[in-house]
Length: 427
Image (cartoon, rainbow, N blue to C red; front, side, top):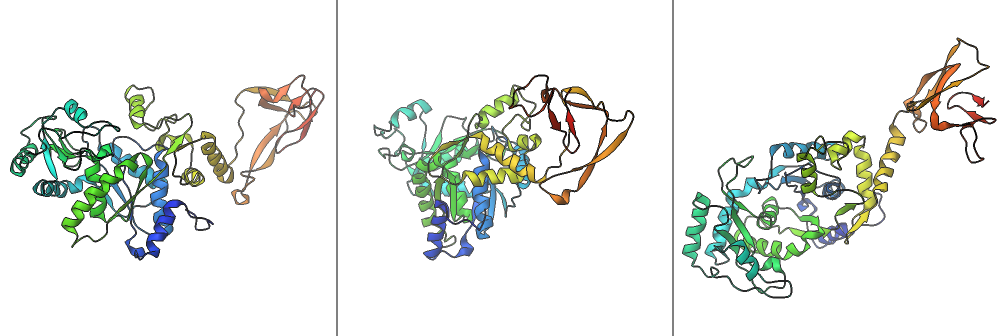
């Protein structure tokens, strides 16, 4: 993120206003929270660039926190790949953390919410819950288990944790408002039973917290000053703030900073699959050789294709930070890699579809070595020597027996200069 920019984007304006209103600069802390359920793709580079770019710009720490709350889809392989990709892009994180680091604390706080009458165990089917939740235009209604006693809720939740129930029998819900205009506030799920092996905690837990409960509280525990996420999470901000306020009132003596969530437009790239679920299917169905197949839009795939860290970072900076979703043409990404490689890549010559060229007035059997620049954009790259003789090979597309005035390659009756060599005449 360049310090030479003349204007600030809206996220930087928010941060500057917070600093102007008394937030100590030392309190700035950002985070990038990927879920380790696949490899990072080009769409993630914007979130990476924003969070780590702000860290570089303000000289503030950035946490790398893995949102590992769904053991059915997450693996250590994905954790390692994500770390490798971020490091390859040239970013350094302050702390490597996991949502699973906070499982016990999140559980304890959930018990606190139950004791405060702000959470309850629901035993309805998922279909019944969906029906009583209402629609965006129709308010929801209270479920039959919403007014369970605190004692019963505590007993059921403890038994959920002990593994007495199968998935789908019970869930823990926050007790907010079933008539709220934001459907996410209509008693959202906090915990579900999921008897799967976790890549870090093994089989210690059989209940796992939902994203909305985990996300904000993890930010709070890490004292993240600005929690930045894409626009699809904007409706979640009400819930983020509600959970955060409950826990802050409980823990305010020890953790003073309340994180602030703000949203930006995600990166959508034309003609490019941006769904990890669909990319996973390509891998599982062996349509591609793996997540790092050069045809994949993953960061590791782009790396194998020849993209450079600088080209991707420049691409993210050119895309900028917006408040509304849009689609970026893939040609901008291709321009960025060409622009970067043009400055640093050594030139080589190859003939893929050869046609023989004979220089009739060049001495037979003679060979000389001509000097060529390794990179005309970089004098420090030096030069190399290229052999020249009577018999050469050129691309078939570089010759036509008959050509119009707009054809500037070799044709009969016309002159053309061979790169780093002589002018020749077609005959």
